[in-house]
Amino acid sequence: NPARYFDMGDHFGQVAEGMNADLVLLRANPLKDLSNLRDPRGVMIRGQWIDAEQIGATLREIEDRYARD
Image (cartoon, rainbow, N blue to C red):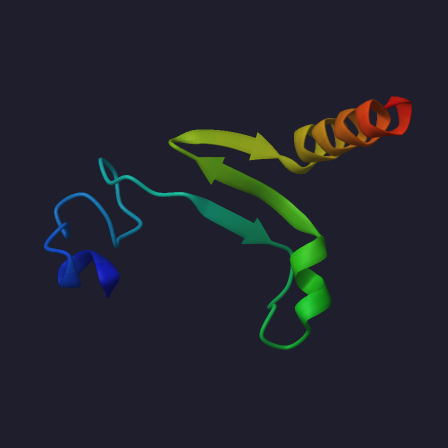
């Protein structure tokens, strides 16, 4: 566990209340098929949940912005 190695186990390295974590929730196991990484249900970034709809909207906005440039 990297958090223990860096002596930060009190803040990182667990999925628990009060811990700092960035997570990706997938619909299926990426170890069975790496393409499952392309279909996230959402992500948790610094305690803020971003669902698949928000991810899609952000990606479309980025795509539109680059298409104009």
